[in-house]
Image (cartoon, rainbow, N blue to C red; front, top):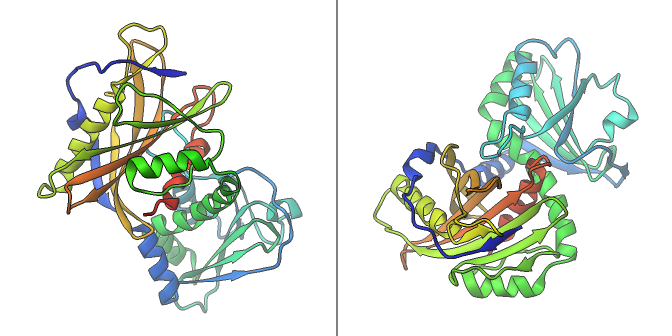
Length: 350
């Protein structure tokens, strides 16, 4: 769908793209919570096969408690829009809210159940993770609090952590399937180009960009495509992260400029200048990375989509390795397709 051409020079727009920056250490926070007793993980024998789609959640909560602030807090937790997508899509989809007593077998067989129990004698709010109670593969996240106010406060102060617990469950299931059919030749090529090992699923193929320093893999579908890009660039280790992020955005834009649409003269891929980029520092498997979420487009054409970029900095060499996942899917929801690719970064290692 996208072909290569020579670079096109034009002014950078990176300063416009950057939105608020916040420190996110989801994995560390999650592991710390588990270790310190904030939640417990249990598992049950395999049961029936789950129903529903990925990133769908059934909320089990008493109807009386599901009023006012508690319902709003749960909706904010699950249905807030994900940054960086071309159309509004939420972190999760709430299939329904139902009390435990009224829940049907089909309700309980969804892949993610979020249960809320209000027990007046409960001293401190906490959650417990249980797997495969009613179906397999399934995550049951049970939050316990003394009252609705306490539950709301806990949800609001542990939003990132609770989202990560649910997202990790979906991510692990996708990776199990992808690991069964890895693209071993591309993985070897990726390791040689970047110095990192990373899972690349089957059905990806290698592209030949005009810029030899850009590594590029494509997985084509009938009306959509997934892209993996990687390159290495210099950075100034003495600069703060805001300055470094601007430099990485500019570097991504320059690499994008080497890619163009077929048969469209003067076209070039670029970061969408009219959409903000979400900038975060994230910790994944012990590696601190700069995470950028935004949109791309092809100038003088009608193509565009979403991208997520992860950058690893090496202060000993002043080199930054940039790994980009991009999607073209004009007729499809993009969240799940992007989540598939983003899952791959969790397999990254030396």
